[in-house]
Image (cartoon, rainbow, N blue to C red; front, side, top):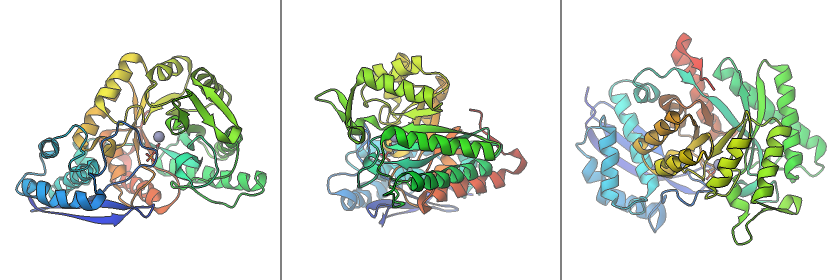
Length: 414
Ligand code: PGA
Ligand code: ZN
């Protein structure tokens, strides 16, 4: 079996927002891999640059000129060499030359091409054939912020995690139930609710921030009573997206209220305690390590997760670990560019006792690799939405992985 790269092709396709993105195919003597890059809307400042100036078209030109000639003849099995080569070709600190999304698509397509060269599914290849733990799905059921067009909650995402589910299939079913219940509760309480949904398939009602949490919390309780799972509400505040740096306040438009850092800390603690939140992502501005550390110290029984804070970057995570900022991090491979970089950050997180959460982006395609990355990297949680084809694609792939593992399959320890 040979994993020598024979052909590399890139094209532009549409993502779930109707925007252009890059898809890369890698063909080896005995294998084939193909991956498409996702896109953020509430991106972190410290992420790598998705595309060079000129967008996807410019990235495709650079790909042909700089990347293709170097890749042909390389061995796809040597993932870290391929990823190091991408850095070398790019020759910047943030992939602004070839584009982080090009690096991402090449890196992931390469891993799949290597896996198929050896007749292995990607999750098995990535985990050295030992990965058998399914992640808990963290599902977005209600939201606003930068993921919707109109006037909705300032807090970006209200999510559910079905703890104690005995299988991934059961966990996924619980999330679908909570999503449906939230819809029915919104129909009852908001007269003008149209059933509109945001980029990630979450309901997008015109409602005050805490009222939304009360509804999600009620839906979680009802599903917990009906099923043998503990559905707990969670938040992705995405606080940088409504932080006014000049005034030093978080602007809650739906509540006609500003909160300074201290008030924001109190507010987050109140929500965590009152609604028994299991997880809070980005509760503060992306550079406010101190407040993250303060909240992590004070909150009990709740994951405090950094997305825009860490941007899957090893150095930013190392700083967070040193300061005690957070106890969980989001892993979005295209925030950092390559699989090797993302794996290093994930390993550091695990070493420090931080829970890594493999995550989609608000702009996605039906690419299902995220499911494999979650199991292959050993992430106990996957954040990939509940509804809409591009989200369900990942959930369904995890159902297939669970089936593939048979009686070796087990839920992660969380
Ligand atoms: P994104 O953010 O829009 O950058 O993908 C989603 C998130 O904040 O988790
Ligand atoms: Zn986030």
